[in-house]
Amino acid sequence: MSQIWFALAASLTVFMTSFNGVHAQSITDVERLFSNLMVGYSKMFRPVLNQSKQVIVVPGLDIVSIQDFNEVEEKISFTALLYLAWNDERLVWDPKDYGGIDNLYIDVSKIWAPQLMLTNVVNKNERLSEDWHTVRVNASGWCLYVIANVFTSSCDVDVTFYPWDTQTCSLDFMPANYGVDKMILYPIYHKVQLTYYSPNGAWDLMDTSVTSELYSFMVRFNVVLERKPRFAIVNVILPLIIMSALNILVFLIPTECGERISFCLTVLLSIAVFLTLVGDNLPKNSNPMSLFSYYLVSVLAISAAITLSVICSLHVYHRSEKQQPGGAWRAIAMCLECYYVRRTGSESADRTNRSDKIKFARPENASHRSSHGMHSIPYSSHTNRGVILYRPTHSYGTLPSDRPEDKPLQKKETDDSDSSVLEITWAEVSIALDKVFFLFFILLLITDTLCFLIIIYHNVSL
Ligand SMILES: *[C@@H]1O[C@H](CO)[C@@H](O)[C@H](O)[C@H]1NC(C)=O
Ligand SMILES: *[C@@H]1O[C@H](CO)[C@@H](O)[C@H](O)[C@H]1NC(C)=O
Image 1 (spheres, rainbow, N blue to C red):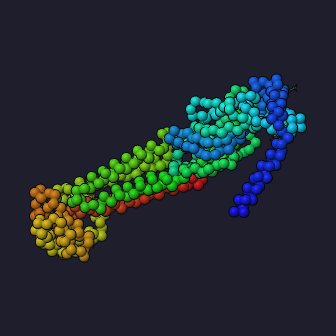
Image 2 (tube, protein in one colour):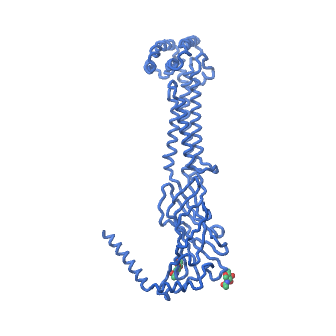
């Protein structure tokens, strides 16, 4: 409470002293000063007594906020205060002659004021100064003109490292109606002022600089902005990774289920739709392309490859049993499932026993389709053999007439008699393929995502 009273008292004191300072100044003094200054004043001509000299205007910028940054249209709007200071050699007076008046506010329409234009403007070039603006003039002729406005400039957006990108945008000002021999812009501050700056939600203002270009004819206020990546990570990258991971799970769906292709295509479609949504938020130029776009395409390609692999696996699964897996397939399946093949090789004695059990499982299956979980119980000790058990279930479920159950069994028996050839069915090959595809695509997705992140981090940290 006491602090507030103190502040109040302090501000009152300041007010009283300033009032005391003004005390000697009367309205007639101000009017007399103004009319004396305006005698013979022509605002058409530059405020230098020797007209062969250049007018030096000191520009400064104070950014209040970043209103809008549209990366797609490559334009940025700043709410900012543009300060212009120059010396008008005609507006000089002695404060003692005018009751101590040491500064005066004059309408910009009454005196000479520099006309600047924003050179990297997006829309039609508009006049920066308005007639109702005022200029503060002090007794030695120094004029200070503050233009508060929303400045919209074009900005070359480089989204190579989206969403960890850094953009450099600038506001370029140039005299609108004089050549470099008549007027120059001479910035004295090397940074953009941020006195009233309020932070932006999507972009961090990292750095600023002020440069003088074209032999002091143009001043460029540069602003370095860094994207806050959390939005893109949460809304774009994570959902994409989740969807791709979901797509890989297709290899865990049993083939008998018949939903594999539709699942695959649904996820593929949602990734494609997602891709167009994300694409809308990136600038539509390919120079330079965003690495993220390549990542999106790679994710789409992986999804397409998953769909192809599922089709391939289904094709293998549904191959006719009459045609036994050839040497190549056998080799593939053996390589993929070495451990399994080794076991079947060593336990070939069990085989007749197993085919008996399949025969035994058949009636139970035919009556009750979902019972294959039950009949797999006797084989729970050999988990790898589950694949054998699923085959009859499948042939009952989807191709009942096409595949008489006795034929493969007979074949197996003949295979058994020929002990040099290992018994592998198409379903086993297909399931082996599924396992391999599952691991392969998981590794591929992880590698792809890691590569993307590492490349971006590597380049951003450079
Ligand atoms: C006006 O300025 C020019 C260039 O600065 C100079 O050469 C010239 O002598 C000046 N004229 C007068 C009258 O001071
Ligand atoms: C007028 O302003 C300029 C620039 O701020 C300063 O250097 C100068 O001393 C001021 N003159 C008076 C009389 O206050």
